[in-house]
Image (tube, rainbow, N blue to C red; front, side, top):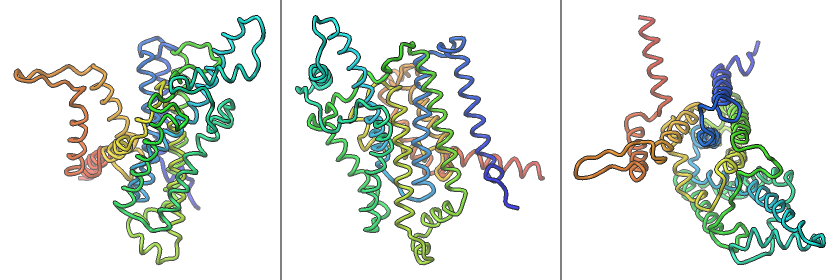
Length: 392
């Protein structure tokens, strides 16, 4: 009798239980729903960390299991943020404009309202006209669909062109990085229709919601935890069956898998597209908590950081990607947020805000040289030694 998915993957149930306990614990300690021990700003940091863990899970699927080192998945993450950010900014601005124009003697016409909204949003780049890409910015449903559709379509087109040409290895990584750089450079232009270097701001203000940020931050924490749990479950299901065996085979010996009759390019394209959609969802949840998104968020360096997080946690292990990302994200917030004390050497004072990226890079080198399995690999090594000790 074939065992159920959970019976074959008990670690999934453990992860979901820990995630639920963590979410409930933070809620109970928060200012919005609990006793106020955990500040609202830190709740937002935790919520954003969960979103980063979700995109890391997608990265682990494409890199750790399929063997495709994509240095462009943070571009999909940013696109998801831009899609939901367009609705948030449009609707928030519309409410402000309506409140202002309602004080006039005559009711405003739809054209006047639209012109005022456009001036408020695009005045910073010297325009008041809505670009074509904002055609559905007034529809939450359409923008939510675009959160998944835009990253998915871009990944589908790019992946089809790359995989049908059988571009692999470092050349594919360079291509994904070039795609990310091209997107970032396009978004930096005012003509992109997304306010250029200014990006989209004020995203933390939910239109029509009067609840304080302490409450809104918990709502987003719940949504981020739910998305991470579902994403983890989906990826675990993908890698546990025959499909997972095929993509691991592609990672280990692509030529042999192709010789056995499998459509390697189709498998790669599907994984690339699915992980791009997951990244888009993660970005759509992240940036309303961050409050702002600009082109710097989709620069190539961000995707490199993503690969570093997964490597530190241990690629090829879904929970490893979560551990590595959560660890680096929270430690980064501690070092760069001013909580870490400066270290005086007499002749020089180490300020962690300036040195954190060097520490991160050095950590990546150490993990690569001495612990290629990452943090999760060290945990498994200790467990094996303990079992051997118990058996002895």
